[in-house]
Length: 64
Length: 142
Image 1 (cartoon, rainbow over the protein chains, first blue to last red):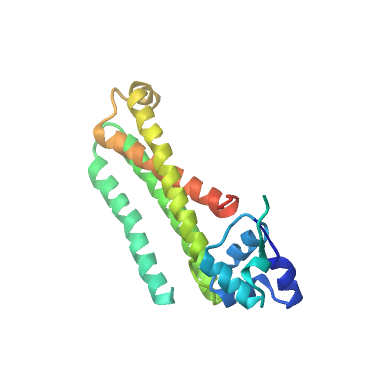
Image 2 (cartoon, rainbow over the protein chains, first blue to last red):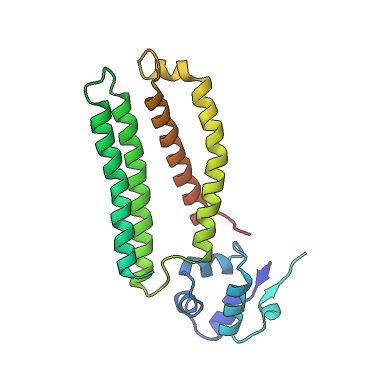
């Protein structure tokens, strides 16, 4: 599953650490999410989408 | 996780190597072979290295006002525990099958039950630490 976290984080001038603090996750989790090496829970996906002011389906793209 | 909880975890974690150390000193002192104490010290070393690594990681997160653990770190622990348990079954089988060869390797007649148990625990600890390190640094958790 691809995502636009890095792109949207850059748009709002947020560091990985700031985003991690906003969603209550560790910085490594954001790093692995951006690399596509971790699929978040629905709760974390929702928190990230809310922090980046987009809907979940705009943030995560299913890649068949 | 606040600092008080981290201190409590550190104390609890320090008690594990302390118990292993005292156990090995009392259980194996005066025995013919030093294998028991060598195995105990190996387990102790693995536990201490893992613990130091684990605590430093959590301390850094708390220092930066980030949670000490989150859903990914919990998933890493669960995956490492599950994989190490599965692989350790083979390790236990190997100890049983190659008992004589292991005894020859260590220069003793036969492995005692506590030496075999020590080898098993050392292997399990090492496997868990290796899997945890792999999942934490490289592993894909999809």
